[in-house]
Image (cartoon, rainbow, N blue to C red; front, side, top):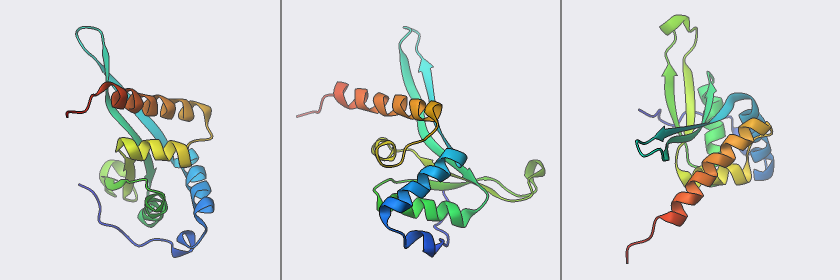
Length: 141
């Protein structure tokens, strides 16, 4: 279940969009990663099952600020409670921000991306899997 929008750091949202997206990239380099899992079918073809970009942090206000900055650039995401304080010895609540929709992941790669080459390569695989899907699925007249 996603978390209702929280307070944001208004100073971050007052910056020009280009600067906000640079901030999101640096934040993503440290606190986010692409997730790409495939399912291998019996006929040995592989099908993407899970494709997303995940940010993790204990500061809900910061994640909400990052979410707002990305939304201004057309990148949709959701924030979830990952782990409550006191569960598994956690001292604080932990949250995740997920980018799940294909168009938002494509925009994320185009506008934000990752500096880390292995994260960037995995993100590229995710984007290419969406592009292959849109070219192989024919529209119904």
